[in-house]
Length: 123
Image (cartoon, rainbow, N blue to C red; front, top):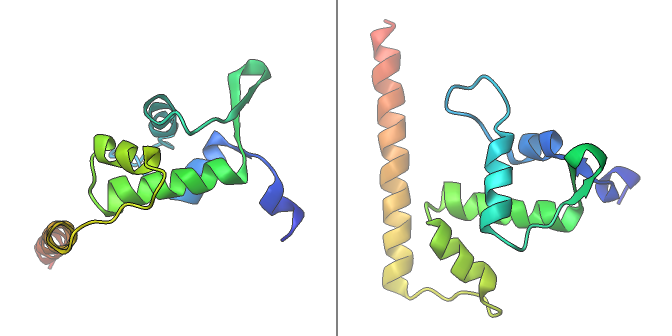
């Protein structure tokens, strides 16, 4: 592990690490991390002079988990809160697990279909 792994990261650096994108694609969506800070009390960046936020490795790992559950798994904020507040790992029954996977697969297929349609317009 090198020194950079243990150093604190700014909010802009964390946005890049998480690969967050704004819908318009013009600027870094740092507002997303600030919103998640309000929703998830487990996220505790150091706030130093000038109200600049600095995130340690533990906070970044937690943000990665939140990002995965919200964006990739399609969970709600309420659902992610339940997981984070639960001391034991969440065990989904087989039906719920398959349902989440099916919904995610449908969403991904819809996105791919839309991309293919937009590419066909350029021909």
